[in-house]
Length: 283
Length: 329
Image: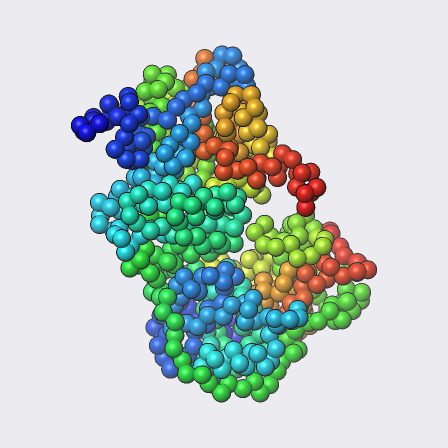
């Protein structure tokens, strides 16, 4: 069995339980359900609200560099800290936060494998106590916008099929049978997918306990099964960019793809475009 | 009125010391009412067991009372420490109604797609509500959702909450072995041949299955459930059953999957032609019973009708008269 390309980006729940009080290590919970953190979280973990903290309040965009910096300063995070993100729904928004934090240049970031559910299934400690940290002077010194795909690039890919597009939504969303998963808002006017996209639902990358599948299984899924090439630029998308952050993480860090972007505009943007052609065939 | 009445006298006179005296038992069963005009076959005696006659309005009174009594007996509840429970409505309403009368707080975690009537009722009976994005029936093991939020409260705020956990608690199932099963047996004079139930927590089906396997293993138990993608609150589709701790396939004759749109039509027919205030879930069970009983001779069949239509007005409107909604919007 081969290893992940970058195994250091994952930590286990066991490892977190043993190290959670170590200086220089910060746990951050980010959930789809924004009430979950307040109900209870891992002792010492800070909570980020994806709607309020990770998106721009006045335009459809990720949080600005300035607001991101303020957010991290208020949470008392230092540039040298190792950040461990975890959350619900198999780390959907934890992966989204990981992606944004990478864009804003933080060096040491991990995901807790299995997320919040695995921690709970193992009956580990939870608290409602909020961590107290002195605000820091956190400063964003480098940005990595190459991790993000914007609409002009997507339109070019849709016309020229110049790079593989991975649609990580459910097959029913991909074929346009539904516009959104049953319990989430329909944020596009119509259902379907971007021309040329291939469908691999994000959940295929996780095992039953919520942890990531082995490197061999992931390789069989994305490289042998879908025909993706780790040396070729690749773009992932979903409905609003959180599930595709999960697949982006798998491709970039677990399989070592050299150039992977997350298209966070995703189907919410593309599915509403005037005069844009869509497809509804199954993959 | 000052003398202490026996339980039998209370039931005869319908005068009770408290609301808890009204809870169902073999001496105070919920009614069995025969379906007449809509019966699928004249050779069959088809009865609906009207669980909305329970004091808090649904079959869930049985499990809720069993679990609440257990928590009290174990000293888990106090004025400072109440209950947290994931619910699609009925269990929460039962627990909150009972707990309020006993002096405990209740916090319910409920999926966002549950009808507004149920959420409002929960607030009316005093439950604090967490509304979360989840399937319409909380499903253990499938994700984070209502069940794990409730578990989080119970773990992180153990000084404030204890979680009965109807999805895994054997006392849910045991309530039906102790009450629903014996009631049906006595009410049908031991002649029951078929029983029809819906699947949610699977407490009713497994409790009745356990009871009848012991009492008379010839009684056939059918589980009815909606097709995938349904919006009937509290019910579970077959694809989710392997994560239901209380589900035991060996107790069931057959699982019937019914197109959920049919459930709304059948519920309306029961309301209009039988005078039964049947909820969509009752409509679903009735459709399942009709399919099985069409060609059966001399059967005595009982359908467990879990609750009435009153909590589902908005969802009935959505399915039966979608044009009204579109016009009004």
